[in-house]
Image 1 (cartoon, rainbow, N blue to C red):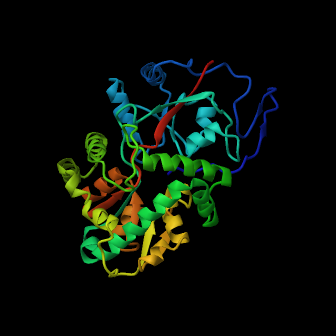
Image 2 (cartoon, rainbow, N blue to C red):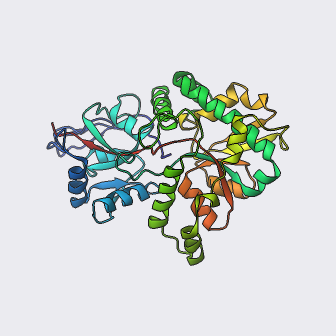
Image 3 (tube, rainbow, N blue to C red):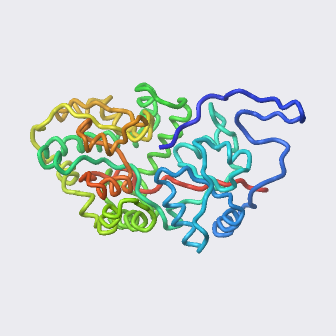
Length: 363
């Protein structure tokens, strides 16, 4: 997840012009930007790309953007987008990347840190465009899973129960996340919880999903195929290895299947840690609900949730044994394995991509 905005900031008064720049909200006294409602996604993408105003922050999200531009036979170039939506607000970026549960909420809403655009913006969805890549999953190392199968299954059982309960009551889940040290406002936390529920319960084709953590092999294969095409690795050996991967090289559904049927015994290791991909918020609400409601204790586990966003990536932390489980994206795991980490995905929490491109309506 990308860095979330905080507070309203400091307003800057420019003496040479009679223009006040608000810290958040629509930029005033500017020529109308954007596209008319009903304009096709293809037209918007082509025109934004021709103007050089498609934005993305990188860090793994860019592969979907590259695949999208290639779909329309456009140059695969994009603006480097900051970890806020200021470039979108001031029209530097006409088609800006946003996660539905984070940046899009900030663009649309008027709560703390919001830009107040409401329904005056539209979106282009990576799922609808056929270039979606799978995001948040649970992983461990192949070695840990083989040596601690009961621990892995028990952890998955309790975690998926946490996700089911969190999705059934997003308001409760948001409150739990806020209690555990939320990095965003309560209102934004609530927005995140509702949107994350959608990512967990809807697949890339828009179909309802009731099996939390399940592997959609078609979506997983699409993710791997896009990664092979657009991830560029300097190490030739690693690049060759990535290109050779099949899904069996990065995932194993057997632990989740056993967990769902509660086919596990006493955990071999009772005290475990999971490192998140970012700071505490509803992107990870299933784990916090499982912890708060005692689901981990019920299966004999003492779980510590380690926030991400530090100097050590979640893949490295799991590989080196600093934590036992991690939350990452499929592409990150595949690249780590190409570099020799031997990680193993054991559950796919998000069933669709959360990335959209947001643009302004001109009418």
